Image (cartoon, rainbow over all chains, first blue to last red; front, side, top):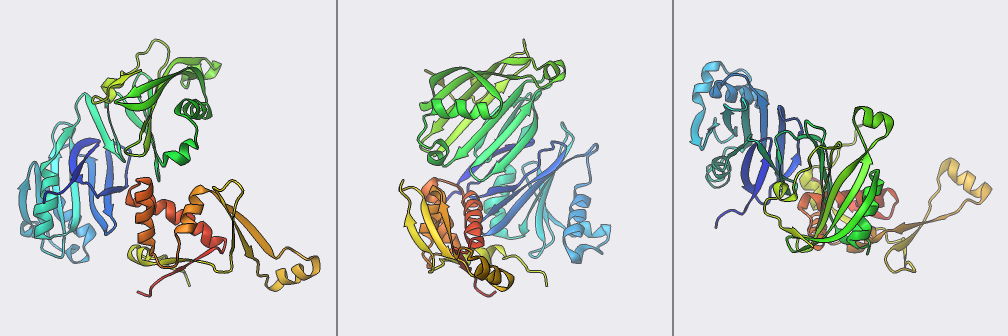
Length: 295
Length: 121
């Protein structure tokens, strides 16, 4: 039976990972960081990325990792790198020293000059064939003009001028905030347990209340539909956050926010964006290409 | 000696149990739950209790989620089973459900409403 997978998209990469893997640690720096994956059985894998100006020697990179993670490998000479069993999986070179050593896979992305490094558990032929290789082979680059973010149940895309500024991951409550080079802000939220979140309030009551708690002034509330889901669309203004706008308290008046309730998934999603005067906002369909909106 | 936390597997196989001495009374709105527990004073506090007739019972009110968690604890189900049950009920992931339940059960333990039985490794 084929393994159920889901999309993962983060800085520089996109993979299909097993559906039961959950991200249990993350970094928000696009130059160096890691994501860790676990299931109820424990740690499954870690993918690490780091800026690297030149193409590194992959086998030396693998030996360095083994030296850092295995007491037995600490004293091994550079020649031991030749003992690492390797095979290709897509753009990755997968390598291991035997059944007691962790399996790893390394690839260098020429265009963003990023080294990607996967570390899995101890080498196991079956896990390698059924799980690890398909992950590595599913690699897609994520460094174009449009960057996709698919993590913690969220899935959207943004122009590469938007940088991740803040991220909070709590149980059933995820928030990611981006800011573009022209100071436009885009914030994404995903909540679970909608009954407890909404507490019998309609979306038209809950969302304006929530935005007010974020310092927004509500201009207009409109019932809407997002891909067949009950939704609400709000226009709002907020005190400017940069330079003179902040100093003199001039509001940015072009705020647009959407909130929709996915009843099948039992999740509530929100997308808010605002920009300094005369700066364009993103279109909903550019951020969520598969969504259809209407009233 | 420094107390070590539970390992992941040990935590999942542990069994939360209700304190049998807790008096349970549903609240008027039917959503939350009122719990009443006797206080045990020792040492200096026992003296203060006798001198000033301090209260000997304490009441706690659990919100809707706290009530669900408390009511699902039956002394039979392991922490892992409770996590799965809670995750299915609210369509949460395993780790979301685990994080929420851990927090709730920790609070219930601090209040003396629940104890957790852990198997020796």
